[in-house]
Image (cartoon, rainbow, N blue to C red):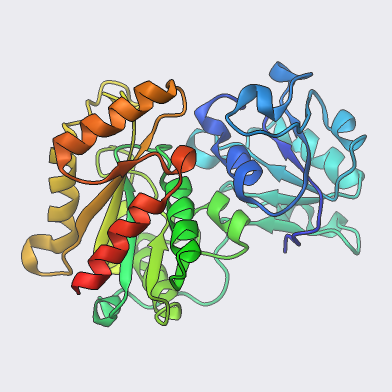
Length: 349
C-alpha cells in the first residue's frame, strides 16, 4: 500500500535514542519514502542526525500539527512498545492524522482497520502490517530442504540486536557483487521497508512455520535468501525463532549481537552465554540431532554504533579470534565480509 513517492511522518514518541525506536530507525535508514518529520516531544528541536548515526537533517518535532507543516501523506507508527500493543493515548494522534487526510501504517498487533474503516476518505488507507493476508498456509513439511540455494537465517542473542539491519546490509552486498539474492521480511519494519513479507509472529503457532516455508518456496529461484530474524533462543518470551528455522530449512545462519552485551535487555537477569556456546546452540537446534537440515553459523554481525572506531575494530577482532568466524558491523562498515562468507559456502556446495 505504501507507494515509494509518498511522504511520511514517523510517530516515535518517547522512543528516539531508545531500542524501541527500531522501526523508526529502520524506516529512516532503509525505506525509499521521503521522511518529512519525526514526532518525539522529548527531543523536539533536534534532528535525526543529532540522535542517531544517520546523516539526516529530518526535523524532530513535538506534535503532529507541527509535523504537518513539513507536508506528508502517511503517518507511520514507528515505535515497538513491549508486547506490540497500541497504547491508549496513541488513538488521539491517529484520529488527528485521519482528520488531516493522512493514511496510516500500523505495525503493532492491535488492528486499526476494524476501528476506522468507516471514516476513511477515498484516497486514505490503513495498512495493518501484522494482519496476515490470504489463505492459511499448509503445515510446514521441510519442503524447503529440497532446494539447492543458500537460505540464511538471521539469528541473535536477544531482541533488537540488528537482525533486520544485518540481513538488509548483507543482501545489499550480495546484490552489489552480482548475486541473485532476496531479503525475506518477517516483521513489521522489514515488511514496511520491502513492501511485502509475512508477519511471522501474527500467525497461529501451527501455521507460522508453514508461512515461512511458503515464502521461501515462492523465492526458490533465487540463489541466496536472507530470512529476517525475530527474537532469540535465549529469550524466555521469544517463540518466533523456531518457525523461522523450521520453515526455511536454513542451511546457513548469521548470528547478531551487540558488542559488550553480557545480559538480555529485558529480563536483565538472564545472562548471555559465551558466543561460541550460543553458536553451538543454534547449530544444534537447526539440525534437530540430525533429523533436519543442518545449518552452520557462517559469520557474526556485531553492533558497535556506540563505540569509537578503534574500539569497534578491537571488539570485532577479538570476537573473530574467539570464534574463528568473520565478524563485521555491517551497518557501520558494510556487509561485504558476511556476503563473502555466504558465497564461499555456495562454492563448497
